[in-house]
Structures are given as structure tokens and as C-alpha cells.
Length: 155
Image 1: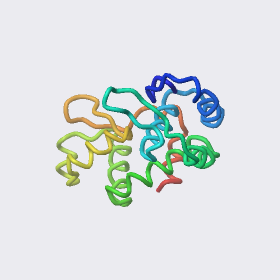
Image 2: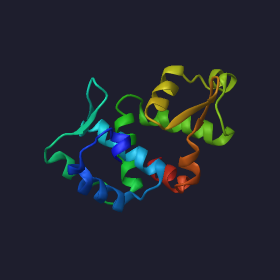
Image 3: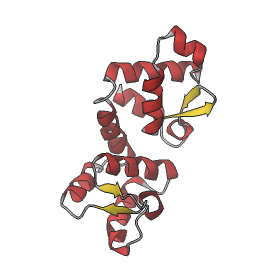
Image 4: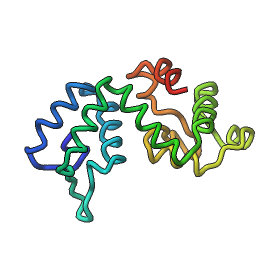
């Protein structure tokens, strides 16, 4: 967690231990919880590329909000995403990728999916660019988490 958040202080060790006990040590889970904490402005990166955790009660509220493990984290992360891309649109994009196992330029044109939407989902670590302009859902969503259950729950 210290590497992902770029924090060097041991004072956060107990906080990180509580997170790990709730979501496991799987790299994908750690990445998603780190992104969630960044979206809540609990983890911040300074201009000199050092991370720090805001010393306030919000970090403990975030900790209590992930009581159901990675499912809770992903639900909250998607709630942040829906602020920028409508929920129905995200579901549509993920469904297309899930059905076709990827999204290339041809499919993007057929289904009229904007590259800005795809880039945003990549920034949020929901999608990744496999090769030039071919997007897919992070394999870790599909393999490490029972994604069908999560995707059904989100959808």
C-alpha cells in the first residue's frame, strides 16, 4: 500500500493493515482501493511525487465504507465514474467489451463510443488499452474477482 500511495511513513501502517484485512493482498484490489482513496482526496500526491494521507476522520469513514471488501470499493468507484459518464453509458460500453472481449476502432464506430469515454475509463483503471486503440476490461476484474457477480450487481 505504501508503494501505491507513495507514502513512506510508518504512521499509516495500522490504517493500511485494516484495509488489507478487508480487501486482501491481491494487487488488483489494492490498486482499486488506492484509486478510491485518491478519489475521496484521502490520498494525495504532492508536486514532488510524494504521497500523503490526509489526517482527518474521513479516512476512517472510508475504511468503514469498504466493509464488504472489493465489492464495496468497486461500487463506490463506479459511483464516482457515473458523475462523469452516465451509468447507462458505462454499462453499455462494458457490455460491448464483455460480449466481444475487446473494443477496437471498428466496434467503437459501430456502437458510437467516444474515445474520451474510453480514455476516462482507462484513467480510472476500469479499462486498459491492450494494443493500439484496442480496449478491454482489466483482466483482473474478470479473473481475480467474480466479475459476473460484480458486473450484475453494478448493472
